[in-house]
Image (cartoon, rainbow, N blue to C red; front, top):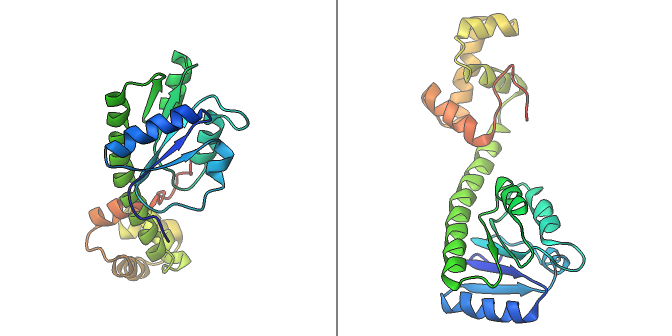
Length: 211
């Protein structure tokens, strides 16, 4: 993995905008990579550091909103600050609902842009840490047997061992054994810790369905 530092990715088809905003962001001590199109950005090698994307809405080829949709499909994606000279209220509301940090109109106020970028970078740092933690937890979850995982999904609903045993058709003693192994493998000592860990990993309780 490379590029572990803080980077702002600027995607805008207007060369003058790329030049002026790159200068502004660099003056704030930020590393900037500028791209003339969405496809150019997508062709970049994977980035693993702390970063965000400043993205123009209207561009030839793949638009900013279409790129945003592609980014959102990933298991993890950097926060996005939209820039546009053609935006409207409905577009702004929609992108914010989808998770965009901000929606700024051109010509953008320097301070407003820098504030939005700092918010985006802070969000990325927090969410990236949560994402990495979730990956680690999922790796531990893979060490569970099918039955242990099944017991886990019932334990986090608050069911007692006897209830779990009845539901799964196994003895209460067997449930206790599986439950102990789950706690040991996942490195937790209480049901409360187990529930928090399951939430971080996106484990769904028994009887529910994934979104």
